[in-house]
Image: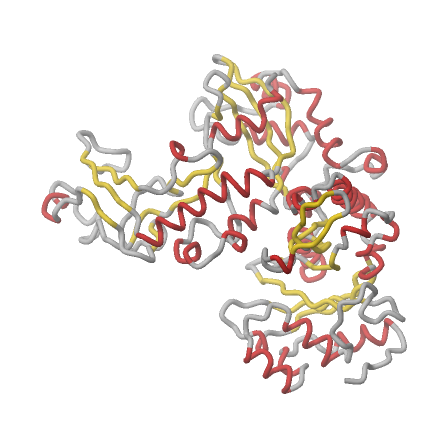
Length: 514
């Protein structure tokens, strides 16, 4: 193929705009179309085909931009339409990191800036179960990284320094998207020997990684380009703060003046009502009031761009655990999907993907007798060793159980349960008694063992019942029409979710209590 010589960035951009509202198959050659049908699971097919056929640029792995004489990189990325807005389906890969070279650079000439400072960014709309050639280009934008908001660039620079520090510590194998906010160091390819590479300050080989703009940040860009959304509330209004301190330190300092105050004192200070029963919201309201926010912390511009999840943690110091469990809420997987788990490998699992990406802000209170005292906040992510040992072990045990069949045990109850039943069903999925970091428990307070889409999940292998009563026994005395005829089936069980162990979360924040 003879590469086209483009006269200017503007010429490329005008050509990119001509692709908008057209199906991908109309932009590419028959030869590229055949490549897709020969290997439909090739993740890079869309970008490679459009780069080569529409822009007449040869696919390459060079360190400089795709069109080097214009300093212009070409990227094609998927977005998803929701009822009200758009979001990114994935991160935007900028370039492969050379551990042996990157640490020698300054941020001004970081490798991702050399390659991807200026990007012709084409968005296509991803639709589930629609073949890639049938998808449509929805927008074409010029993304100049140097023209991002100044506060974003300062945070991206801080992220780059976090990544460089890991390399200099000889711990490139411990890099994780959960360590940073906007700029990620994301694994490339499966975890095989061919994807391991050397690092300069350790003999341990590390997984090959790429600089990326993380999914949450790309979602905010998509909303900006596609939806013209209104500006969101900010926590940091003085950009100069970011020139002196890290994002994390700025946020932590805003909470510091309130450490040691009781929840009642804080509620009085901020005019927040604390109900005597069912109080799950007041601590969150107090937390945002400490930051002088009108809305939720997670909805601020910085937290949305960073995808940081805020968790209120109340510690029972006497028993060295939290008073309530913390559910692991993966936006892409509302509850555990047994069919997905049995067909995944750990390194490609949705649980590992989420926990190696997500960063938390833990807002910590301590229950001390009748008083609840604010103890501070901590930015936290699951560390590499816990993820690859404790959590991996629980995931693999879960996969094993789903593949062999979940054991369900029926036990009669003398008094009706909260949902009015005279029995409980127990299972052998990993619980708190057999795990160190995470466990499985129902995501609904209503037990269900038949095909109810809102309450139950289908099992890939027939369950193994113990003490299951005959139909006549468990039908007796039930409320008319309240339960279907087939209440206890072999192929369904109550929807389950991953939860952090209460003792595990205590260990992550105990320094705030000492």
